[in-house]
Image (cartoon, rainbow, N blue to C red; front, side):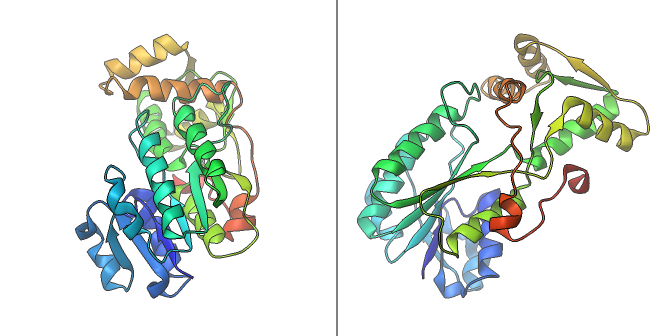
Length: 280
């Protein structure tokens, strides 16, 4: 069985590739990337590295040729990626791919204020309409991205947040990769939507406790509204497009959209999920 990974040179893509190459024969692995030179080390390990650019739909069917299952990793152009995702899905169908797993987000519903939801909801819908077998991998917020936040709070003595009493079940990229490999290399996942989470949902108070353990001093939680939070991010130097996005994740957390904890990492990925404290 031949398995493809799109966006294979990205952070998640490389983790999936590493775990997949440790699981199946390298001759069964196809790695798709806009720049094959970035994956020369994987080609040397026996993987088939192919050029694939979602902005060039004409070349995509050849990129998917001979592939039976594929992991479609969502691109990072938030708000402008659905067209590329649809092009990849259409090309995969033309090439004879049978099953696509897609990296989505928990609760991609209209009442979820996270800024990434519209893209993911539209891509999920495109997959459902494609005629292909599909699996939605609804990854929680990456625990990896909370390390700088916690270290910054430890240094400042304050954790400024807009997620109120909400909580998020942060999950590591490596654990998300394990689930993706589990889906791609086993049976029975067609038509399933999996919430991929860490082992615990962390509140602001939990994050402040972790920060305090690092600094050896108490860390105060400072709750602010969305506008104040976004303004603070901009003042700290975040790009104009990123501050509203980060603020929207806080709003989604506040509304409970990221609090669900599941056993998917262990059940599908075959490993214990990594606690945030362990990652730190």
